[in-house]
Length: 161
Image 1 (spheres, rainbow, N blue to C red):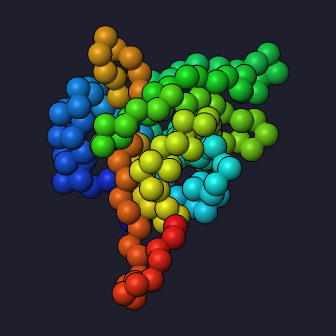
Image 2 (image 1 turned 90 degrees about the vertical axis):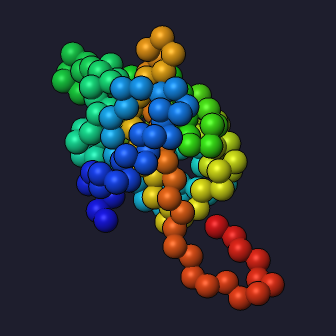
C-alpha cells in the first residue's frame, strides 16, 4: 500500500471502533507514514511528514494556524501543542509544526520519543494518523501502529528494532 494513500474501508472501520471506545469523535483520516530509522532512532524526538502528505489529509482543516503566512508569503512556522493518543490508551503532549527550511511538517518533543519507546515502534512500522476531537472539543491526533513484517527469527536470537 502506498503510505500516502487512504486506508481501506475495513481497516478504517476497525480504527473507528477503537476510537469510539476511547471517547474520540469527529475522527478523519489524515495520513499514513512508514517509519524510517531516523524516526525511531534514540536521541531523535521527532517524526517528519511531507508537505504533500499533510496537505492531502485533514490536518490543515483541524489545525489551520499551521498554514498562516508571514508578510513575505512564507509559512509562519507556527507551533501547535497537540495531544497524540494511541489504541493502547497512551496519551502524549507534542508540538506539531511546519518548517520552511525543509518544507515539511514535524511532530516534535520528548513525549514523542517516550511514545516511540513505550509502544516499541520500529523501522518499517506503518502508522495511520487521524485528526480527532475528544471531551469538550479538544483537538488531537490519534495513531494506529501496524508492525512491520519481520523476517523469521531463529530460536534464542535477540530481536532489536
